[in-house]
Each structure stands twice: as structure tokens, then as C-alpha cells.
Length: 156
Image 1 (cartoon, helix red, strand yellow):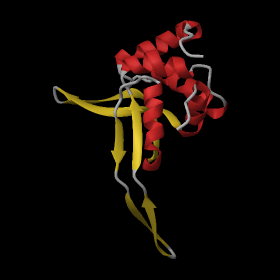
Image 2 (cartoon, helix red, strand yellow):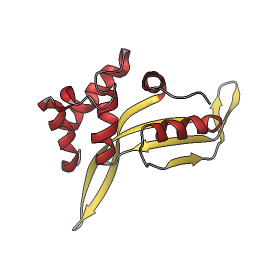
Image 3 (cartoon, one colour):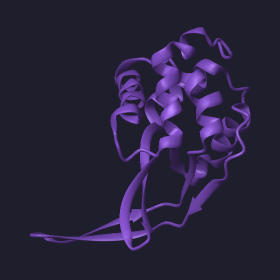
Image 4 (spheres, one colour):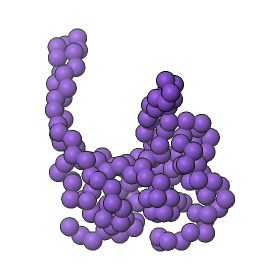
């Protein structure tokens, strides 16, 4: 495999990456509440697992890469059943505060192009305005709004 670069990874994420939220339902003292955790993820076919490991290692994050088995999905249509065969998938999910704050956000902040750059800023804004986002993750929004990531030149 050729050596990875910052620009290769950013371009790859523009096509394959996702800035999202994972929802958790918490039950405390008989009360149910929803909490969201900001997350960055990449999901690929298993044939590209070495690339996913290389990206994870390049970014120096410790997160596990999950391997999901494939399967088939049958959809009933007016012309009969249509069967979709799904291959095995590998997935990297980053949702720990330290990696998001110190690696993911600085690496991508103002360095993405196209729609992914808008999705990224919208994700940061949603961290701040969504009441279901866990309070401990609100620091990501505060750092963004304070200009911290403007001054943070850890990555080219």
C-alpha cells in the first residue's frame, strides 16, 4: 500500500466518511431519556479493511475496527422477490471525547471541500444546539465557537 497523506485521507473521507450522532437510551430511577454522542465513522467493504486500519493508524487513534458479517436482503416487488447480497463490512467509529477533540476535529476543520465541509460544520453546530447531546461533549462546540480550532494547526 502506498504511503497515506493528509490530503488523501481528507479526500477519502469526503466520499466515505460520516459525521453523525449515536443515540443511547438511558433509564435512571424509572425515567427514560435519550442521549446523543457525537461520532465520526467510516464504513467500507471488508476487502478494504487494510486501508481502514492504515487510516486509523495514520491518525493515531486507538479505536477498534468492527467487522460485520454479510448477508442477503429480500425485497418483495410486484415482479417477484429481489435479493440483494451484502458483503462483509468493516467500520471505524470514533466517539470518545479525546479523539474527537484532539484529532478528528483539528484534522478536518476547514480542510474539507464540497458538501462534506457543510455537513462537518452543521455537525459541530448540532453538538451545541441539540439538547440530547451529552453535556460532556458540549466542550467540542464551545471550542469551535471560541475559535480554538482556528488557531490549532496540529495538522497541515
